[in-house]
Length: 261
Image: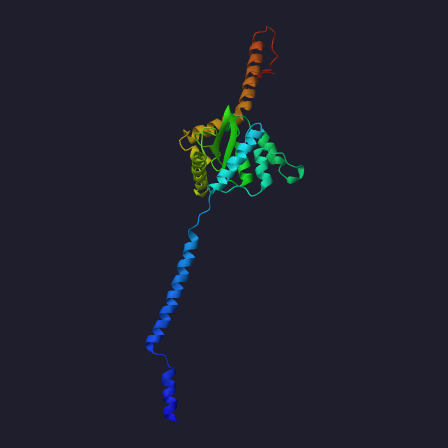
C-alpha cells in the first residue's frame, strides 16, 4: 500500500522542465499585451479648421465655402460638429433661438480687407474652437486665405479658387492648419522684466550737499519773515530821515547842572 501511494505522488508531481515551460508561456503573454498597449498611444489629433465667408454672403460664396469645408474633412482635418455654427460662419440664415446671434453679428462686421478685422477673426476662431480659419472672400475672383487663431495673423499667400485644383487647395490649407496647431503647444513668451524700483531709478541723479539742502529748506520757511523785517526796517528808516528834514524844534530837555538851585 505504501509503494502504491508513493508511485501516485511521483506521477502527479510536475517535472522542472514542465514548470519552466509554463512560466515561459506566461511571460510571453505578458509581453504581447504590453506591445499592444504601446501601439495605441501613437495616434495624433488632426488640426481643426472652420470656414468663414467675409463680405456679402451671396449664394456662390456660401456654396464655395461649403465645398471647401467638405474638402477639408476629406483630407482628414476636423471641423466644428455644430451644424448651426458652421452655417452661421458661412453667412447662412438661422433662427433667433440658436444662440448664435453674436457670432452672426461679428461675421456681418467683417470688411473687404481681412487684415483690418484681426480681432474679429480671432474671436470667431475661439468660438469655433478652431486652430485656423479658412476665409473665403472676393477680390474680383473668389480667394482663399488661412488665419492663424493663436497668432491672430493671416499667413502669407492667397489661393484663387477657380485657378486651383483639389490637391492644391488641400495642400494649401493643411500645411497652414498644422502649423497653427503647433503654435498652441509652444511655450508662451517670457514676460518682460519688472521695472526697477523708484530708488534705483534715481541712483544717477546728482546729489546736493546736506548743508545746502538744509539751508534751502530753512530759507523756504523763513522768507516771509525776512520780507516783513525788510519792510519794517525800510519804514523806520524813512521816518527817521523825514523827521531830520523838518525845521520844527524838538521837545524841551531838562538838564541837571551840579550846584544849581
